[in-house]
Image 1 (cartoon, rainbow, N blue to C red):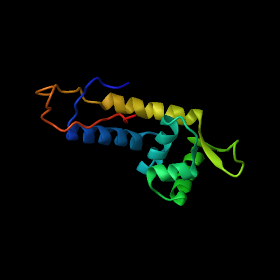
Image 2 (cartoon, one colour; image 1 turned 45 degrees about the vertical axis):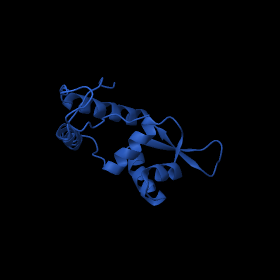
Image 3 (cartoon, rainbow, N blue to C red; image 1 turned 135 degrees about the vertical axis):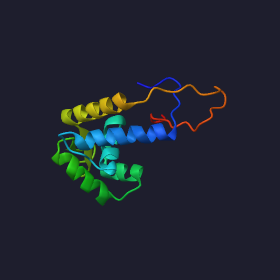
Length: 137
């Protein structure tokens, strides 16, 4: 759910990131690294099939880095590796019910810490830098 024309300050964005990260660290479940979370959210937010190669390219890291992160995410059953039906030599990265529930809970944590948007002084020229909190599509 996107906030309608919400303007957040950089400080608001950092406090939100800190609160969400602290909630993840304090929770009973795993606390993933930023790289692992980037991979996990990419798999769940993008509808197309992911491979080690495609994830490495989109994150700008090596395939070995992606493989290590996928090993951890697989161990926690947040993702699953599947044979690519189009190319049996290739592996795709798939979603799991546990991963979906984990990200839903994480999103709920973020939403519970979101500050109320403050009105800008002028709709045409805001007085602060706007930090988008949703990915652009």
